[in-house]
Length: 469
Image (cartoon, rainbow, N blue to C red; front, side, top):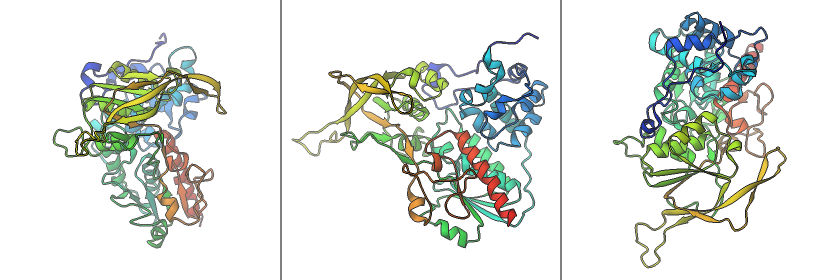
């Protein structure tokens, strides 16, 4: 059979339709398309794609099962190493991980590994009603701080080994960044809830509205009888540019903007969660979070949305697919452009004027790429005399996040680096005995799958340490 050079396209909603609704953009492969895509796999003996997966999913085996029509078998193969296949199939950057290692990709487009993983997970969720069976308890207890991808992965791996696991989540819903950070149109929250329910079936307990560092401390968790603690609290502290005007009404961090929409459902007509809707919106940044914020603003009714990024299109760190979707939906890219000041309305003659303090625009400057910096990226350099004003009503800062300092400030002996990330060894062990950490709490903002890999590593180390005693 001749090789099909290109991966099968992912069916999507039409741009003009999806730009004004929160339904999932990608519609998923049909069974027929999935089988045809799976048949493109060369089933290499050295399996390079597996080395590109942070959780080492047995990719050739599950794809071979799809090619034979054994969709449930493929799901069970993925489940051996990944607790969140429906999530990973949607949001992982496969193009820079497993698919970048695909041998077929040397001459043609790589196999659509992520699209096939999503298909398998969706097929299982739609057709299989049986829930996982809780393993027999081994009598040991572990606490997990945070219910994001690293925490859920660590909890799942330990629960499968018989540990009594409790996950403590600061918000009112389990899922961490999967529910507050990633929009419905990219990751439906029913998908996350399904994955959480699977962990509950394994015996994992979830305690929401518990802030570790305030409600309880790490020390108190040990006093409660937990033998190990895994910290997967994420990177929830937003960064700002520290330019004039960031305190005006209508300026959001991407964290706040997306949390209000995703977790607090501000996009619904019956929601009483306040959020700026309509008008002209500027999103500062070029990563996946910036794309999520911009596309969310559009769906909330914005007349025009700008992505303001200080480098060129080639340097945009967001996934190419998300950039293409944003362009198709009509979002305008102001590239090689940097904000210098946020402008606001002020009526000195009437301090009670309701317009006072609200954003009216953003002063920017054009940039050009100069010499490479220490990391090899060409440094943006301001072009003299290129200042201009962008008329906007809302500004969303999506320039990164840092680990929340609460846990480190309430836990003695926990070493952190200069950026606030918890310092760990290769097993995820911190400077405190029995305390492990992983994901964004260690690395700063990174990918879902890398956080999952850290949770998996820590789970194995926790099991080895406890059973070794």
